[in-house]
Length: 376
Image 1 (cartoon, rainbow, N blue to C red):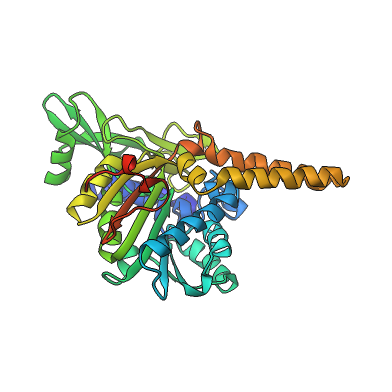
Image 2 (cartoon, one colour):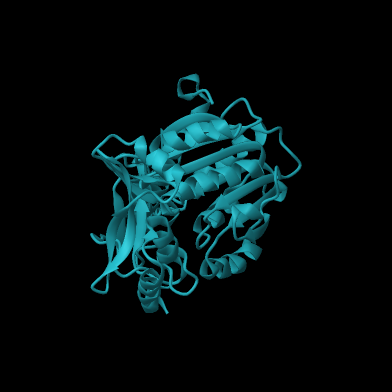
């Protein structure tokens, strides 16, 4: 079915005219009969994520990522007044790798409700089989709109989600903003220019410097509104790679390799762009949320005890060597090496983490120090 997605998109465009890049991206990633996350990408690997998939995320690099974030959850628990049940929401739960590591390291799993939000049916099947194995109670929903208004007391967590939410592409020419649509020429999907698709897109594009091109993250902004409405008291922590509105490049990945033409083979290519965290923080303020700005993933994990855990594993490795258990020591060394990628400032450690809050005064983790606080 994945091979048919490109043909279906071409017929749609030929019948009704060019579509926005956001519409293309929504289909290319999430179409139920051929989207990238619904079995596209390296479908034969069983998942788009992982060493044999198309890309890796921090939970797939090392379980230490989730174990350390569990400490952040326990900080949140105290900051919101140690409620009888803390709500932990993971948006874009995927195959459940992060959820499993988080839940397994929670200090109070018996007083935690885990809500896994996942749009794609393929991943919801995996999550359904995982949930009964976790030490905390939980449920699966398809969208943040399924969360009741003001129902969350705790933490909403989104790791490497926002870059995959649909966005529009706009170029600010001297004569005004022009939107970049997806059209068809000679049987191929191509980029075509036209007037902005809405006054809102026109206004956002007009804020780009003349001569620049960028993205307008309508999907990420929509997520922010929905998640903010669900949050009664607590925090949102959003982790991703950063980009500004103007000059943000659109990327494609397949089999861990960059793809130059993101319009080719829709459903087989991950489509992504860096996240404008400043825009999200500004918009959050209009929703009644406070922003403590961003820290790097490296700063976040170091504040949660990464070094102590790495040192502990090093000591265990040395003990194994002294006992003549070389094979086990080698495996532990490999695990420590993978975990170090989480704090590599040139890679995953350079990702940014934005902390937002509602009806709370003090931020958890590294955002809690005065120098990281921003008004909002």
